[in-house]
Amino acid sequence: MNVIEVKGLKKSYGLVHAVRGVDLSIPQGEIFALLGPNGAGKTTTVEILEGFRSRDAGEVSVLGFDPQTKGHAAREWRNRIGIVLQSAADAGDLTVLETIDHFSGYYSKPRNVEEVLNAVGLEEKSGALIRNLSGGQRRRLDVALGIIGSPDLLFLDEPTTGFDPEARRSFWALIEKLRGTGTTILLTTHYLDEAEALADRVAVINDGLIIEVSTPAELGGRATSKAIVSWRDGDTIKTESTDNPTSVVTKLTTHFGGEIPELTVSRPSLEDIYLTMIGGTHE
Ligand code: ATP
Image 1 (cartoon, rainbow, N blue to C red):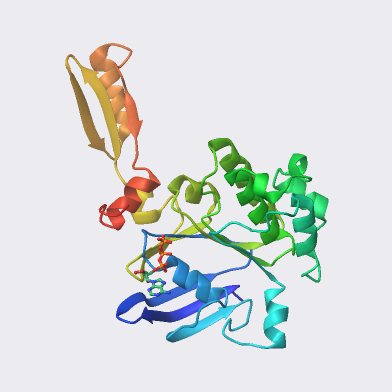
Image 2: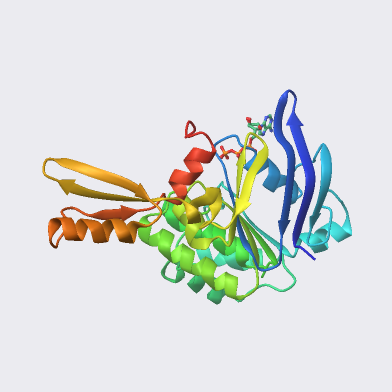
């Protein structure tokens, strides 16, 4: 059984058709990234899955449960879900440790508070007041609060916005650790390198519809796309688009009798492919 199963999901706000028929199947243990430009319908989709918004049409199952259901069963279900929203935690007068400890009380099988503190790299800030944390440190606290309940499913909405490059790498390592525990993760991000580093599969959503679901390596035919070989010849930079870069380089090596000036061989990045897919006009 898939952890997330969505068929024909639709949601409009008045005349705005935010989600126009989305299908998704996410198996247990997968890290799945939802990519798309501003206003594509990511937050709407995710918040419907989280039970925070109603839908107009379609079938939705999250951990075998319809998120629209209310009552006791919904509380049991929520206990199995971790959510890291875009907005930061706000309880300025508590310390980091107090906040994580407080949240752990909401769950039936919380992780160890110290362990979570270490996992997000906030051990040295455990006694600091939340209002004195930097933006990136607050975000780590948000992640700590998302994972304190040992969720089976974790929603991460743009988790590393505002992180410095080092904090982003250590966050990625944290997510890799969670992968090892079998946690299913649904991630939205605007960072293509993040999707590439973390996601088993990505979905590109644009204007309320999913354009493609694929592995980062294969998205948009990336795996079979041509390589670009570029080098300097006198005053000009030359390029050749090829299926077989090795033969081009071999030919050039013979031509130059050794070192090829300013040689590069590249393939389109995930970002190149993504921008082509969404028309390259957004963001
Ligand atoms: P971003 O990357 O900017 O977070 P997103 O992909 O999450 O964008 P959504 O927030 O789902 O996009 O918005 C999809 C569309 O629905 C947008 O046109 C947005 O203006 C509209 N929308 C979202 N929430 C509401 C609301 N509560 N009322 C009216 N329109 C809304």
